[in-house]
Length: 533
Ligand code: BES
Ligand code: MN
Ligand code: ZN
Image (cartoon, rainbow, N blue to C red):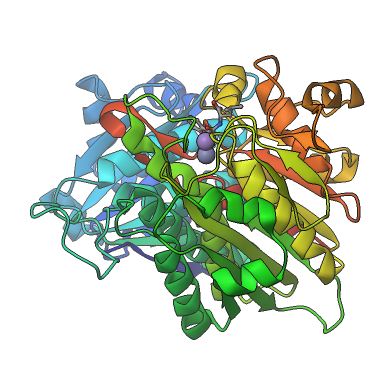
């Protein structure tokens, strides 16, 4: 179903050390695997082809493999470009020289002197290219040699690389719906043959390596759950389904889960949240998930996810084109649930609470009208000028609710505005916060997971656009800076704690031929939580 990830530690093996390299390579080649994955730099290829005495990784490998690399190079199969790949298949001579690997996949790191060649982005390209070669054929298992280990990188880089590799391999192995018991959605959706990825390391990095593999596995589980929830059709992935999923996590990883129904939501005075669910026959839910990994009494980090399981726009109805994609309007919720699952699996030693207000936004005779005024849990009244700006209406009550936890920080995650896609496209999620430390930590976590954010403003001047003649605040601020005014609206409910808002409208799913949930920003949130102290 998914890939099995593990580590194998070779005492003393150190490919970065030229003196030990040949014996280390011989050790790696002697492992029984369908494919040994090795990375080489442009200099290794230059050395192999040059006239000087042959040194470097490829030359030494060539000697161990009976000239197979020289041969491949003569045929033009080796390239000095970053992310180029070449597969060598076992020959008789390999066996007699003690090589047990059935294949060797060589992947190019390119010219390491170029700017950025040793960055995580470069590594990600190399890793993706290699993983692509491992998938879709007859390779079942691979032994993966970590380039940073060879390049003598700092050790935290190893963790980032390993987690990223697992994230990409998990991504590649993901098949929609196979983990959800509700129905078989696609008759022919074959699992990949590739099932087992082993990270090779030495004593020096074994601790980081083991920890990073465990974290990576947990993160992929969380991402798969987030993807499934996003991709599930809106007739199945209802607020009740999200509640049941959260309760399932209570059993699986020991989260404490509470799911409040309409009566309890009413009792809390969440008039804003209730105004959104009013037009729908499907009952709303308010989900609270607690992970108690830290000391009792330690202030928790709170994650709040927008859980609109379908957004028609309500009476301010959306146009019909691509409206099916509004099933993804619960991706904030999915990422919060996925992150809670991941940190539960990791047994993260921190207190984290996930909160999900969830309902549908439907038009009906009962539905909220443009012009209606409702009272939020905070006491502020809201004039609803557009029922399609519903995300902020459910989030504001959740943001008031979480005050009771006296949080260390609150991060809300929402597919909040189409305007965010116009501003940032599908590359970065938007981040909004007045807290520099929080912005910096989220930016850093984004870089470490390549699940990046870009800061947008929250200045007082934008608040002007939310003025209402009839209530404390309007729920829309017109077309200019639509993502900013949405964030400004939320900020009115967050005065009691440190807060950041993530607008994931452009990053949570892909449209077109590759339509599907991306699992973002689970990697960002998990990396952020890992780095909190
Ligand atoms: N869920 C949408 C935002 C959205 C739209 C996300 C398209 C991804 C793709 C949100 O509820 C919404 O409809 N926002 C409106 C706000 C407007 C009425 C002020 C929007 O962005 O058009
Ligand atoms: Mn909407
Ligand atoms: Zn919405």
